[in-house]
Image (cartoon, rainbow, N blue to C red; front, side, top):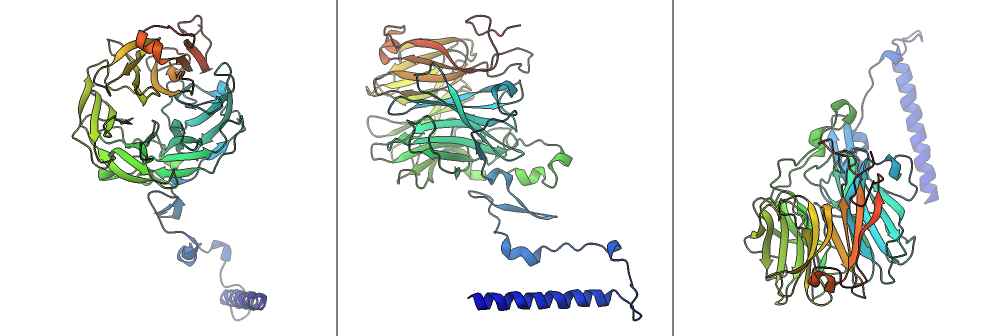
Length: 468
C-alpha cells in the first residue's frame, strides 16, 4: 500500500513538472524572450475537474448544495446550527429587543427547563436573525439560568422552540429553522439529552427531522407510537417571506432560498415507532383558513385521535380512527373572535381529564389567559382559572408527578411594537392544580401567578407596564 502511494505521488510530480515546462515553453519565442504577459491573461474557472468531490444536490432533509453561475453553494437553511454555551455580546439579554413564544418541561427530579426565541428588533421576535435560548431552574422557578442558545448560519434563523421529555425520560429540544423569516420549507431540528436532571446536561448533535414547524409537544399513543404535529404553512400569503438586500445576499439569490413543497403543505402528522430513531410523515389535515397550524393531538377514550388547530375562524378540529394516517374533513370546533388566530394548549392530565389553556377575552384580544378542564374529551369545559388578565399569548405546559401544573407564556414579547407601544419583553410562568381550575379560583397552596422567568424591561407595578 505504501509502495503504491509513493509511486502515485512520484508520477503526479513528474506530470506536474512536464505541464509546467510545457506552459513555460508555450509562453516564449524561439529566442527565449516572453511572448505574452501572463498577469494580463484571463483566468480560467474550472468546476468539472472537482465534481467528484462535491456531494449531489438534495433540496430536502439533509445538508445539500445549489448550482449557481459561480459553481455550487451550500443550502444555508440545511446547515447545522451552532449550539453555544458562551453568550457573546450579540446574545446576552441586554442586547435583545424582544423575546417570547416559550416552551417548558420538568425532569423526573424536578428540574425545570424553559426555552424561547429572541432577537435584536424591539418590535417582535419574528425576524431573520432570531435565535433560541434554553434556560433551567433547580428551585421550581424561583430563579433561572440561561444555559445555551441555538444560532443558525447567516441569513437563517431559529425559532418556535419546543421542549418534551419522552417516555425514556430524555429531554428533546426542538426548534424550527428557516432562511429569511419563512422560506416555504422551514425545518424541524432537535438535540437530545439523556440526563435532564443535571444543571448542565450533555447534548447530542443537532439533527434535522422534517420539513415544517413543530411548536407543540408530541403525543405518545397507548400503543407506544409517537406522533409529532408538524405544520407546513399553506393558506398564508406571507410564505415564503425572504427579504434581503441583493448585494448583501450575493452570491445567493432569493430564488435559491425559497421553496414551494406543494401537497406537502398542510397540518402534517409524523410518526416514530422506534422511540425517535426515525420519523415518517403518515397523515395530513387541510382546513381552509389555517394559516399558521400550531396543531395539537390528543388520544380520546375510544382510541380515536382528535386534532385541534389554530384557524382564522377560531379553533378548528379533525379526527382520525386509524392512528393518524387519515383524517376527517375539518370543521370549526370553537369559533368567534375570542378563539380565532391564537395559540392554545391542550393536554391529557393524570386524572384523565383534558386541560385547555387559552386566551379568554370577549373582545378577541390576546389577554385573559385562562385554564379549563373537560371530563368528556372536549364536549364541555368546566371551571376557568384566570392566570393572567394582562396581554398574554402562546401558552405551553406540563404536569409534575405530584399533580402540580406549570404553564408558561409570554407577556408583551416586544419592547417597542409597530404601533409605538412600549413593552417589557417578558416570559411568565403560573403554577396551580386541577382543583383550582375546577373551582375557577385558587383553592390550593400551589397557586403562584405572574412568575417572571425572563424580562427585558423593568416595570412600574404588577400590571407589567414598563418604566418611562
